[in-house]
Image 1 (cartoon, rainbow, N blue to C red):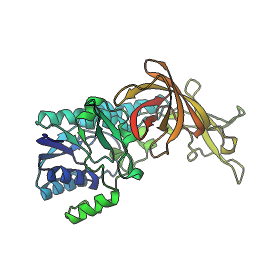
Image 2 (image 1 turned 180 degrees about the horizontal axis):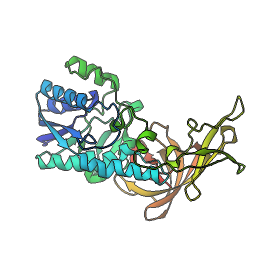
Image 3 (image 1 turned 60 degrees about the horizontal axis):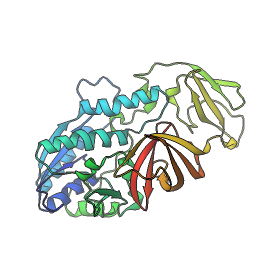
Image 4 (image 1 turned 90 degrees about the horizontal axis):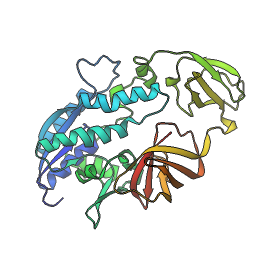
Length: 359
C-alpha cells in the first residue's frame, strides 16, 4: 500500500463497500468511489425484479459525499451482459448451474472496472470483500482468510489471476461484520444499518425460473424415477438443479420421504429423480475442468482442502490433474448434490489456491 497515491473503490451502496471507501480515505490517499451500472439499461427488455439499484446508487453517492471523496458511475452494462448474464442463460440452457458472482468478479469488477480505474489514474481498486491479501517474499500475492471467518468471501475470488490480485485491495479484511457496522455508525454513514443484498441483484424478487422463461422456451419431458419409470412431466430442464426438492409437483405417497432431482438427460429431455432416502445425491469422486490458479499451479497429485460451494466448510480432497486444465478430485467424505457448472475453490493452510468447475 505504501506509495499508492490514488485508489478507486467499487461502491455498491452497501455497508461493506462504504467502510472500504472510508478506510481508503483515512489512509491518506486520493480516493474515487465508483458505482457500477450493470443490468439496468433503459433498453433492457427483461423481467426485472424489485432490484433497488436507484436506491443503491443514491446511498453510494451519499456515503461518498459524507466522507468527502469523488464519485463516478461506470457503465458496465455491456460487459455485464456479455460476461455474466449471457453465460448464465446459456449455462442453464445447456443443463448446468453457473455462478454469476464468480463471473462478475473475474470479468467485470476486477476486469472491466479495474481497467476503468486504471484509465482514471488509479493504482489499485478496492472492494468490500471479506478477504485478505498478503504479499510474499518473492513479490507475489496470496488471498487468505479474513478476520471474520463466517463472512469469508475468498471463494468468490477463486478465478482471479495474479495480476488482478496485485491490483486489488480489501480494506475491511481485518474487521468483523459487527465492527464494520459499528464503524459505519460511528462515522454517521447512511448505510450503517442497511440490510445486506441477497441473490442476483438484477433479478430482484423475480425467481430465476421466471427470468429464464423469458429466454428459454418450454420443452416438456418425462420425469423418471430411479427404477426408470415415468412418474410425471416437467416443462423444461433449465427449471431444475441437482438436489432440488421443491417445484417437482410429484407426490411421494409417503409421510417421511420426498423426491429430489438427481440428474438431467439433455438428449432425452428427461429429469431424473429419486427419494432422498436412496442417497443418490452423495458422491466422492468428481471431474473438474477450467482449472485456474491465483498464484502458481500446485502439484499434479496432492492432498488439499476445498470449499465445495460457498459457505461450505473445508473438505479434505485428493487432487489429481488429468490434462492441461482438468482434474479428478476425490473427497474424503461424500458430498451431496454438487452440480455441473458450480465452482470448487481450493485451499491450503487458509490460502486460496484457485478453482475448478464441476463437469
